[in-house]
Figure 1 (cartoon, rainbow, N blue to C red):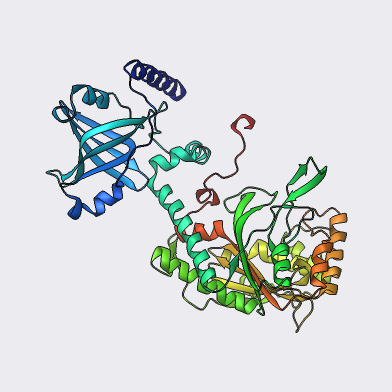
Figure 2 (cartoon, rainbow, N blue to C red; figure 1 turned 135 degrees about the horizontal axis):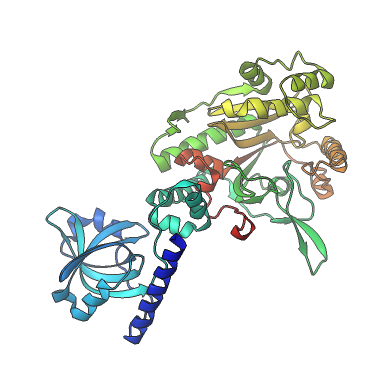
Length: 490
């Protein structure tokens, strides 16, 4: 029935479109000279009262009173009431206005006043139809079906849900504030290739494409890390890149195959410096964009005030599960612990891989944070420097908030011989069927052989951070056009 109703509406509006053109009215107009936004008028009423302004927006409501009508139009800044009278615009213009549909876009010129009920309003003196809407705006948003429609047709979602618009405005401001924070501190924003001949920088399965002219398979990048570290070798001592990353993985409330990250590299620094940089940046951004470093997320507080706790990975596992992997020495003992807890593993999983899997499965979602979890096994950190106190661990941390990993950082591995050995280990895993293992990148090794200064590196998942700062519960709520299965395949 709903589809039939929409079909009828579409046909009725098509007929109106035809009639408008027969009357000499162009339903898709040229640009309109806008002088103010709705927000400008509402916030500046004390100065603009009685002044003439020009606005343009989408009609969201309309109610008529004989020879006078009220309506609300919505532009990119918000909604404002408009008022039109037949004796002011003439019978033909007033009739045209009465025949407009909700969703039509108009440009108008009029005088600002306040109604007896106190609502700031524009008294229309003239208007133009700028775009005829052939489809009616959605009226109700409820249930999974409508949520799916919101993601598929984000344009309608933005039209009717002000909160959705607010989230994406905040996302833009968060990213802008991060850029400003880094630029002021001497970091240079750069761009590196999206298509790689060798993929690396993360444990992830890549998307593959093909370059016809070169007859060459290429990979969409799964990280920007290895190219940015090449730049550090070249003498660019503070660099960052904010851009899209592509990983051929599943979709969930925390995962989208196409997402945004910022990676930051600083010469003559380590992961301690990256912790300080991150907590300072996130706190500064929150205060600038949201006005506070204290947030409510799912009715629980997250305090971004400095400093964030720093906890060792082994200690976190023991505290949250009661399992002390310091006592479960060796691969066999670790596998027994995993089996006892029902943790599924790859057949040849090592002690370090099992510890990491155990942490991911049983600890991550309990870390409300913000918190830095530090010193990860070398077996799962092939690009991080080994710890001086134990070469089986690395100077690596992950940052967590609201049970979500939002950042990953290293004291970078700069020893080209150790890096080669780590790549060889990864190549063996890849040959054994692990599609997420790192590839051998000879050019990156060649760069390291020229000498790379001690470096700290940090990668932050922008989408997850925006989720927490805006209160969103799904990553799809902070990505304008999330990846969706085509409807015809469902």
